[in-house]
Length: 390
Image (cartoon, rainbow, N blue to C red; front, side, top):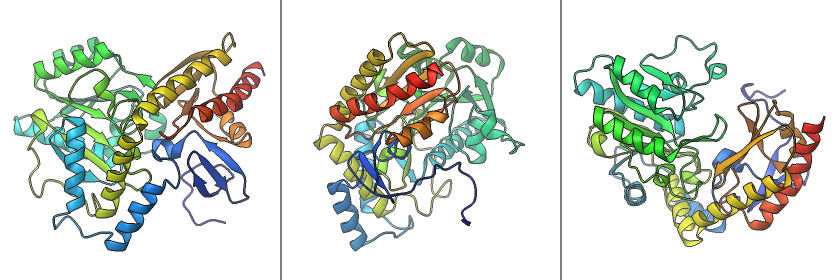
């Protein structure tokens, strides 16, 4: 019996090592990894540049603390600012911590304007994390159940619905920010329209609200641009990162600009481990490798290929609702719960998962090749057809 707390419905497999887009279990069986640790392993497994950089940094120094200047952290902040158009970066260890920082920033911003009960507009089906504040911002009752009372200060509206946000604005003068995922990952790979994003940016400016973009899952070149909001050509006031930023080494970031710039001062927020030399080296190496190996363009190209091949293979199949996505963030929605396909795919030698009960989710590493894409489609489409025909 394991002494690990029973918080995950784990599949009966353990992995010992990986190489590129392949991962091998303790019995020696190889799998095609189309999940990359839930959008984490950006460079796949055992990427030589990342392995060398982490090993070298571990040989120099793992951690000092934020009581001192950290050269690697400053380099990473400069790089992220250049890529994102943001101005300041706070480093932490995870996506929920980055989103906690964003929520705290919004409340701090509201209080500075004399608003006693700062309120953030959030979206249905959103997922922002499992800490108390980020859980409260999340639009998933299943995840929230049993943890009440939730944190107040959130108003929920339908995703991609500007009229609903305008209606809230008319009746609630405590609103200080709007928080959204450009692509909802856990919610089922739903994409906010370009028009909605642009009009939301304008609405936030009109009301003096912060626009917070949760880029934890869709950021770091996964959608074919560095950040999801860049598809619409908008600039948020706050953007959060984690998952793929360190290619498996835990690191999160809360980036600010515009109205959010300069809000936090010493003592307002902090993190013991956030932005330590090891994590920042992993992130810097991830970014440089994405640039040097043109992995952003690869994500766009291979992601489009997967969607095209899936659409061709599943054309006319009854029970298929939609194939959608951006880059290597892909969802295949069926007309019924399909969680059993995760185990069937594992047996077929492919790692995938199912989110929102009915959406098969692919989040391959950005190194995924055309051959990997074809193999993924060849292995998965028969399982989908068999499942829907049953």
